[in-house]
Amino acid sequence: MINRVLIRIRVVQILFSCNQNETNDLKKAENELLFSLQKSYDLYFYLLLLLIELTDAYEQRVDARKAKLLPTQEDMSPNTKLLENKFINQLRVNRQLNDYLKERPFDWTEHDAFLRNTLDSILASEAYQEYSVNPSDEYDVHREFWRNIFKHIICVNEDLYTLLEDESLFWNDDVEIVESFVIKTIKRFDESKGSDQELLPMFKDETDREFAVQLLKESMLNAKEYRELIDRYTKNWESERIAIMDMIIMQIAISEIMTFPSIPINVTLNEYIDVAKSYSTVKSASFINGILDAIVKELKEKKRIFKK
Image (cartoon, rainbow, N blue to C red; front, side, top):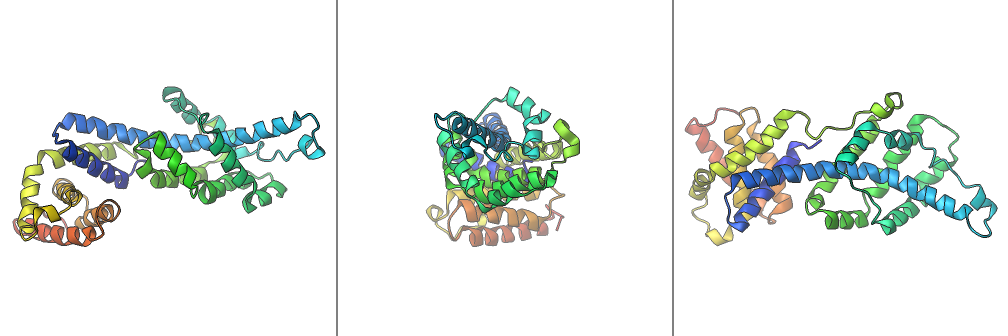
């Protein structure tokens, strides 16, 4: 689930933090990197759990209306299709989800207002109106309802972003990437797999975890060499005019180019230019692109890299 886009962002953030704190403690930086990636995986489960919590909030609302002193006919005969949603019932008993929550427990109990407001938005949506009267009981109808709700109501809810930022410093940068994997997970659910439906693993395979650790390690251990290389191509720039984040992004990009022969150079360049667009100044992307192009040319001429 944790892809290399997120890994690159995390390594940039960790090295920026090291620079700000003037520390070169590699072990501490590695621990912080792995901790932050674990928090990203936590967010994946936290958002899956949200779907169950919203269903439970609706059940509590239904029960409260039935318990009123003078309930109406509508109170006594509510639409229960949301409570009978086959996808949610399958997600609720998912072994992997429940095992994860036992090891790393968290819930939404402190966010009642958010749950109520989000539930109100769901119940007022056109998607719910269509779903609530849809006579079909096909599993796909139940699953696609929640995929639609998650994508078009939950993912665009600004209150969710504020809430997640308050919960964890790491989640603010993760949320859009993790949301895309939640949507992918919902789409993959198969009724026939029951409680054994597989969720996404933390890493696609061990090579991605190794990539994260090695990228951080090589970027820190060879920082002096990479900075000197960058300095040769920025000598006409006053040092104070070069954003620290730009230097760090270029340092890590060079590390990736030098360390991972299987990753094409243009892939690396494009990835870090995208990082610069999101995390540095307006002009950073074009500046970084020009400097890295010149450095790559030199490395090829000196036969220090052979890939395209």
